[in-house]
Length: 150
Image (cartoon, rainbow, N blue to C red):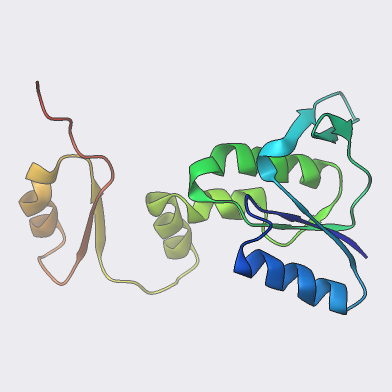
């Protein structure tokens, strides 16, 4: 099987371990720097370039998308998905995992138990949020703190 590992660091311990484990099982493995990809978007003919050259067919990819490149990394994974390549983690799953509110919404929709949680924008409303859910214990998440005025 031809497997691509998407990683910003081919020398990272975890990336090397994945590559070595797959190679020991007889797979043809290559590590790609996610930022080296360009997506070719054409009707019914999605493609990828890697470092400016057309990418050969891969059977599967293992995305290791760092938080600093989530948006672009998810786009690359989505392009592989459109090309029919199996991916160990879907672009949707990566996106959900990086979004605190969305991940809790998905968990709640699938009956996964977790403590009462309130997401809010303004930390001055924490008291109101706690009162609305009947008080502690609870998890309060401030998604984006207000900017300090100059």
